[in-house]
Length: 379
Image 1 (cartoon, rainbow, N blue to C red):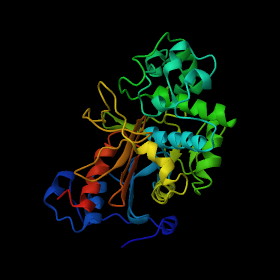
Image 2 (cartoon, rainbow, N blue to C red):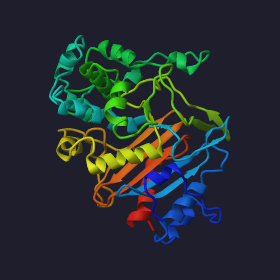
Image 3 (cartoon, helix red, strand yellow):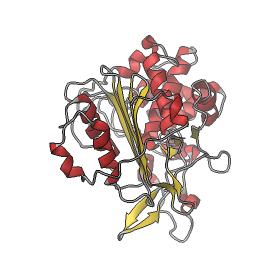
């Protein structure tokens, strides 16, 4: 049965208790009942008293599946539901890209603007780096993670966390990038941290405030936040876990968990359904304004690759390669304690969102498998 986005506020789909099917056992199942197949997948993620998974499937902005299993917090044992906010990790990049595009529309920023002009004091190697290079991962900026000091194991992980200003200092200390901007593609968290700094510089507003005022509040995504420890809170927060020796270990933070533009947003299934609707109906950016984001980057040497290492396409904050002939814009996220994915099959009007607060989930592969149930590509 289809439900509207609004009804998600009042209910979550009950998980089937009568289908003891394992993941591998689904291959021979008939595709006419995809919801039952997804229910069975969810049952494969352990008991209701473990960290879990939240899944939503939308068709033209209608929720056609919503299922959650597990708990958001092993101490409080709060069940995961449609309002639970997960750390999105690299799904954040689509919001950072949208913030940049809004400033381009405002006339305050241009895709050809140079890094050294936007962030005065940046070393000369940034003179050849443009906003476009940062957006499509062709900037050649060094990876800030490679130059962070080793954390002190005697201290809480938060003591060793780097913030956006710290990333900028690392990049300023480098004498050059990895390659000539525009010549290669290399996935760059550094680039998206820098984009967040550019948004703050150009807009005159802190990056989390800009996202809240220009994206989250206009779209009624009231539970979504770019989280800064000590300055903001995350309502209905899921905490991250990893399995170690058969037991769950609290793994909510890492030394890179305090950066913003590359992975600092928390959101829920419900709020991401509003984001999906805004993209489908062009509520935030017009079709013309979105067009640059959906044009695959082309470089003379090695091009984009997906998480599986195979060739892919990339635009601004989105992978763009199709799946079995179905046009698609998608992204995945991986960080300490969390795995996330959103796959939008644009010609089919189908969107699959997977959020997990455990590290033993391949969220992107799971999203594609679920999409196959609804698109007929998975039997």
